[in-house]
Each structure stands twice: as C-alpha cells, then as structure tokens.
Image (cartoon, rainbow, N blue to C red; front, top):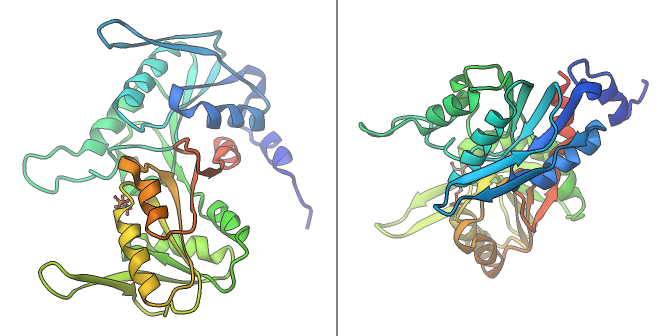
Length: 301
Ligand code: R5P
C-alpha cells in the first residue's frame, strides 16, 4: 500500500487553501497555533494583546487573509473574551475556529433547577462570525450540537498512546478513572495493545472510599491513568495512592487537557505519580504532545 506523508495528506486536503489562508491565535494558544501554521505551510499573523487601564482586554491584529484559521483555547474568562474579540477583528474573512480546549464544557446540562447550560452559552457566543468549529477531545461530543455552525471533534488518543510508548513500560495497565472515561482509555490502550480497565469506587463508610480496577489487577505492573482533563489532580492523586497500596510498581498520569489548577502538577508528583503528560491544547511545561498535525489534517476534511 502506498505510504503518504503528512505533508502529502495536507496537500490533498481540499479545504486547506494555503494561498489565501493565514493562522491567527489568542495569547494562550500561540505555540500550538505557530506549529499549526508550520504544518499547514502558511503564515501566522502577529497580534498585539493589551489591556486598557480599567482592565478591559484589547488586541490589534496584523494583516489578515481571505481565510483565517483562528486558534484559541478557552482556558479562562480572559481567554474567552480575547477569542471573541479576535473573531470580531477577523470580520471580512472566512473564519474557521479551532477550539483546542473549551472550558465550561463540563456544565453541559442543568444539573439542578436554576443552573445555566454553560456549554450552550459559550458555544452560542463562539459560533458568531465563524464558518465551522473544530474541537479536540471535548468533554462530551453532545456539546457540539450547541454550535450554530458545523462542529466536529478530533481525538488525541493515538498521540497519547505514542507518548506512553516512549516510556517503554513492561506490560502497562491503562486505567480510566471512571467508566465515563473508559472509551477514551480504550482508544489510548489500543495503540499499544495494552490491557485496559477503569477504576471503581467502593464506599466503605461515611468518609472512607476505596478505588480499584474493576476487573484487572494492578499488582506488580506499571499503571497509566488516562483522562480527558486533569483539573485539581484530586481524582488521580487519590487513585495513585490506592494503586500503589495494591502493588502497582509505577503510576503515571496522562491527559489531553492539563488544566492543572491549584498546584495539581506538584500534588500529583508529590503523591508518587512518576510523570504527568498532557498535550498543548493548554500550553504547559509538561505539554509533550502537539495537537497541530491532527488539527491540520481535520481542517482539510
Ligand atoms: C470529569 O468529568 C473529567 O473528565 C475529569 O475526570 C475531571 O475533570 C478531573 O478532575 P480533577 O483533576 O479535579 O480530579
């Protein structure tokens, strides 16, 4: 079978119009956006980000093109406002939005009366002024229906698998922290033909909860806990301690979106997790996987 390089694949992408296209990004996605521009062999637009004395955000974009690939992870409220302003500044171009991480996606329903469907509100805000949206491992693909333009989601499961291979682990067990994350963990595990399971919580008393793999045994083997998001790191830190007490030799953590709030990275390492890996959908010191190539390919489809 003929082998095509990534470059060939992108060249054959009919929707990638390099001659009239540029990439532009918000402040918090500048590394990923620059990598994306490089993969697409197009240029990235210089943007000056500033703030008025009263705290309002402002930006000034350089020269735009007919088609703009706008890259912006919503990692916090300022990043959201910057992205809305950037889309507005690109008025007059055909704008395609790449949303590598979408905060607020976890509030995807009214859990109690009076609550907002935050994911719907954010999706509505980001649909204005763009022709389509690409998300990366969005918390739940149901959120895509809240965009009023075509929206698709891509997964970095295989890329996480490739990164885990570099650890050269002997017979690792890939674990999802709960059954909701099992499908993603299975996708990661299949790239190395590794065993996969999910953790199950058992409540022993009012305060005491135990967590162990539902079917497989973690004893005498390395374990990699994989999740879409590591936020406070609480779930994985608790699980790591329990897995060590069940005999796991080493525990690693891998996720797509390293939110890593409130000192989560340190909490995990201090809790015995050997290494924490994440992608650059949120740009972090431990971002070892770039979403650029997979985004470039998806833009052509
Ligand atoms: C939850 O729905 C997500 O998939 C993650 O499991 C969660 O955000 C992890 O949170 P934390 O790191 O705070 O335990």
